[in-house]
Length: 148
Image 1 (cartoon, rainbow, N blue to C red):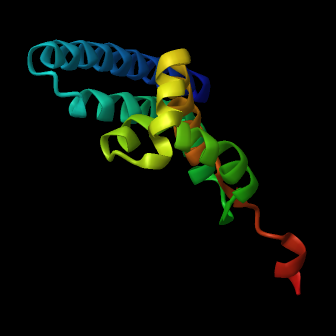
Image 2 (tube, rainbow, N blue to C red):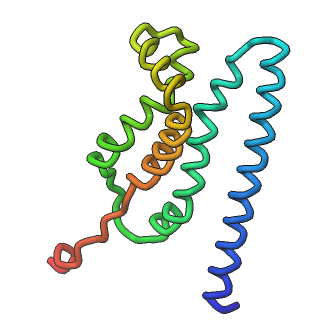
């Protein structure tokens, strides 16, 4: 089979899987909200609101991870990307989990984020999931070092 056709089919399957994940996650969130209305237990809903966007970010970075795995070289972590973009987005994304843990540090922080910017948690989770996978890179082996 032609390489371009394989790539086309691969990306088509990737987009279908991404769409299925979004539909399943949306239905599960609706289910958790329905359960919350009858039990007033926020635990599962808030865990989901923190973890699902991270999984979506992982899925967005998955094709790039596959490309990186296929390359030859040694693994390297881009600490600057991980610390400058990953850590702040992680701290915002886990705000619902920290509220469940009743962390004093997060109590006012969480009220601000939940009250004024509820979509910030979702966006931060997606960014963290994406950055976490993209921060892993491979460095090509140095040809000049092998010649010596």
